[in-house]
Image (cartoon, rainbow, N blue to C red; front, side, top):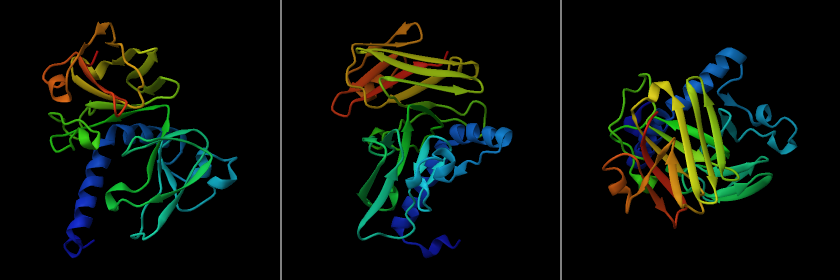
Length: 250
């Protein structure tokens, strides 16, 4: 409420999470449609998603839509934070580390910028990215950007697969991913994204032999920077098991 009273660390964290929320506007809009049509709130107590899990009845975590779980930091912790993951497969939003559910973990806070935030897989998160987006070291693309609330407001997708597949339905189309023994097929069928540069960041990819976006076979680039020079290319970061795709929306 009086931001000038906070130190530089807190302001940097606030700026980062403001950008993160802005990048998630397409996801938030999809959640808002559900809230309007079905009355399910965007911020949800864990029992709304996991009603039969007795361990989910807690007040220190919440679901942000159906796919993102947050264990918020409300004060600087000297010791570890206890985080419970309900049943399923989860990915840390920041490190992309994969975790199995039905477990409680002790996580050491890495500062205000990395509170525990987990993505429930399989899911494909639509993102809106801008000129001030963090570089790939923070696992996000940097693009020319779009107006925040324009239609479309999607520049990228983050893919969190399970069993080498993921699919997400949107009001305007469908996005799907499948990896069959290294042969990757990515389908983006959204009228609003016609001939628009689209970036995809796909987690937990153990093998890549060929990448197709729709009917187009993409060319392997030697680096992320080379891939971004022109569309219809991909870059596979083997150590991080992450596949980056630069293509055109169809």
